[in-house]
Image (tube, rainbow, N blue to C red):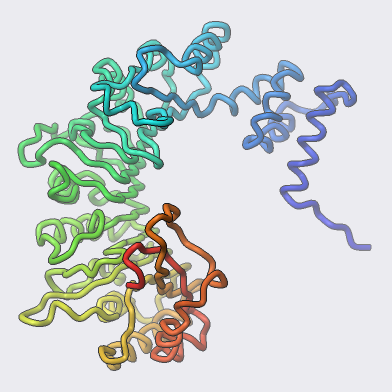
Length: 456
């Protein structure tokens, strides 16, 4: 007789019902179970805040386990208002009543309140400071998140005590995430000696990197970096030369996600930034396990030469890698305009014979036009993909973006499923026509993106 094993969702739902029954007094907690099993039960509810609050009221043992999960991450918001928020006062009341709770907080997230109605920030030169005693009590924070993905924040707009407290907290961090924030001082890297994971996305640093007085003892143990759009000195240059000169992330990375262009720009990419980006990637060739590189997203980027950004034959531990972009190489007069798959082929050429990977994802942002098709380039790319990739990789996909025109009044941008629009079927047919073997192997996929400029 066959027996079915409950799914994880069913198990969590059953656990949640049992906790509710315990809290209502209809079910007794078995007294003879070891504490470790009770902890496993509560841990299954780590994403169920309501159930965890019920657990905290059940018994002393469950209160301890549930509070550790409820207070593992704390979020504070600041605004232009001079008055403290009820959220801050509530948290301070909690830790005054139960001082042990501060030991549970490992992740601290700070961001400005989302404005309602007219933007209040424009009328205020400084946002309200987080109460200093909050920073002083949270001694076990190792993960700090600054900013919010939904709006732009100014580091310099926070009160000086808050900025100093953030710098002090950085001394003990293992993980730092900064999103959509401007006027961040480069001296923050003076305080990240223990850092293991760094994420930057939509960040602009205030200093001129050539003049910035940053100590030589910069973080040197970073294992994981995610570098989205991040610029320095009013966004005129990328962060890569600064990282290379200070040794930040050089030779220690296990995972790296990097946006080479730091946001789309037209024309040639600065050769110093390009070489620094290559140095950053190649310095960790012997330790990288996951590598994701974005060269551009929609605008064609002219790179200074045809050399690949990384050599896969020098990466013995690499298991997953992806490459995205719309690229043309500038090798001489009149050669910087053609966009094709040659730049992808140069990277596939570096794969040693028989080398296996867990996952390879290529995202070439190109549109094939009948009168501009480089047949030989496409055939060569396909032969390399079949010979070196398809039969040696567990997961191999080539994502081609297609673009859908939107109304100017439409504020919703994002990806939509393929069955929501058939306006790009011709483009798909072209790509399938010129890459027939890869199409037959079912590795070609098409994702749709919105663009106010129409079909690109």
